[in-house]
Image 1 (spheres, rainbow, N blue to C red):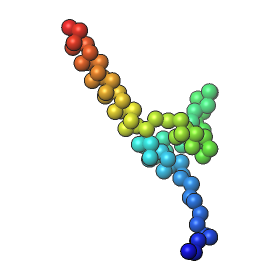
Image 2 (cartoon, rainbow, N blue to C red):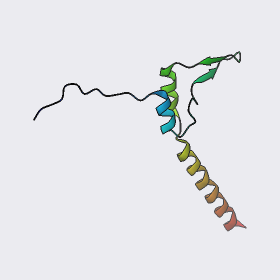
Image 3 (cartoon, one colour):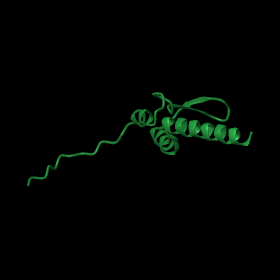
Length: 78
């Protein structure tokens, strides 16, 4: 069996990471300094933000489930 030696793993771009998270393109592109200055974020920091973020669809689903459970619980107590 021949093993290809020219295979390379491609790293996702920050834009692709944002899209996988369900965020708008460029969501992590700019940041704000303490003095209010807008700065361009380095890719390393953008990857970190995506890694520490919450997938938009998951957050929306959790919030909807919470509201439904809270509403059901309050209805039982009345």
